[in-house]
Figure 1 (cartoon, rainbow, N blue to C red):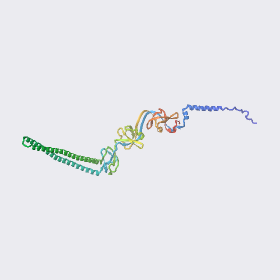
Figure 2 (cartoon, rainbow, N blue to C red; figure 1 turned 90 degrees about the horizontal axis):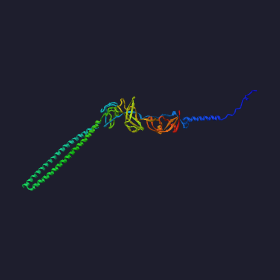
Figure 3 (cartoon, rainbow, N blue to C red; figure 1 turned 60 degrees about the horizontal axis):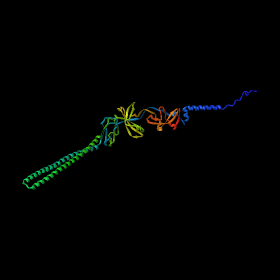
Figure 4 (cartoon, rainbow, N blue to C red; figure 1 turned 180 degrees about the horizontal axis):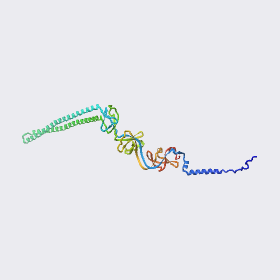
Length: 422
């Protein structure tokens, strides 16, 4: 018979369940203590959800210089680029070609206008006829005045004779040589002579004024005709178009020997000695631009200081046109419509608290931001100030060294605090 191990088996006492429960309790207590000791884990338990740090753009708040500027691409334009127009209709003959260099006062084109030339000749003839009328009126005035002057002189002589006759008759009457009737007759004759003299004098004076006004009216008509002739001569001289500036012929709007109408475009002249750079600025920045603001123009490996010379009052396609003028001499080798880089300085200040600009400024309007501390993004109210292309000024709510989520905060869905996982 084979022996078994039954003689060696001994019953064991029942195991107590208190020890495993105690070990589990100790482990849980340890985990809770670690969680309470670690701020990151403590906030992680409290936050609603977490977002990976790779989805966020984080920038640090710093204090330093703050520069607000506008950078854009501009094109070279001529400050003076006059366009010449036809003063009258006719056949146009061009004396230059596109791209030719011209000097001020140089003949560029000639317009042949037979109608204007005939009108000028007619008005010149009318002016000569009016001049003859003036001379004739002056001669007539002299003749009439001479006749009136003769009548006045005769009346004055008659008046003198009547005075002498009255004096003689008075003496003779006193001597008793003549009756008193003759004295009365002599006195009446003197009275008639005095009246005739007064009428002759008044007639001479009035006729003299009348003749003077008649001559003056003809002279004014002749002067008016001369002004008309002068204006026509100016128009005829305007048929020879000359360059108003020194520069280069830009664009020809007509063909050679073409018949053009009055006020038609003929050609343009570009003044290369006074070039400017035109840039397009977003409407939001346009209100801050002002004439005289400093700027910088760069191109061809060089840069030149400049200042804003003009700002357009009109908004086109949400943009405003502004022009910059070189502060010194205009650089050489620049061409019309050449592309250059433009930068305009709006404001520059030192010791300004600022953070890199991001989408958080546009999304919240600059009223709040998420500040990252110990792996938790806290929603913090802030107040922003001036904004540049790459920075935004912080007025309150943040301190130097704070790390701010500047992009990607839309994943937080407006939560008060969010865990940021590495």
